[in-house]
Figure: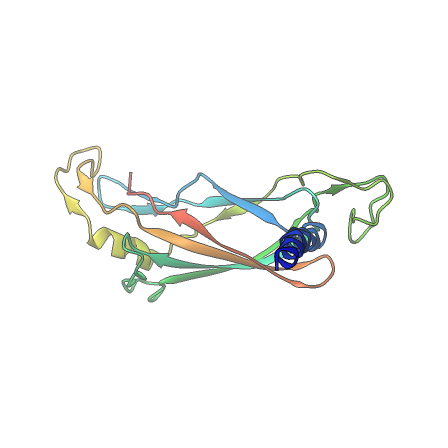
Length: 203
């Protein structure tokens, strides 16, 4: 019995390392952030709401293959983790935000002779593993009008002055979960996420 458990204990790390190797060498692994960080909106002294755009930035980890991101979906939740009931706006009832992308995230591999279509791969001459370059999109308005209106419905106004709603108190803890889809350089479907996007109170 002791011999059996010794063999089992030695075999488990081998299996785990093998599994990690398969993902590390072959699959895209994209990190993601937005600039500025949190989703948000502002309100002028006359009550005009402006929703700010966010630039999406991506980077592949060392050893990961390239991927073309083709779209995203965002679902929105309140501070209790319950889905937000969006309020109908001119755009309709939009409690889920969807958008299209066409952005190639280069692999986390450097080499001496990149392929014209695939770039560097683990089979390229002189291949070395490095973090991929940071790539960015244009600005996207990720926060739907219906979510903004729902968030404002839970706010209270303590003071209003000529500089705007400086005394507007709104709930914190609201957030979105964004998921990206795409296709790797080998033609396989790719899904990244969900990633958390905090919703900041209006400024």
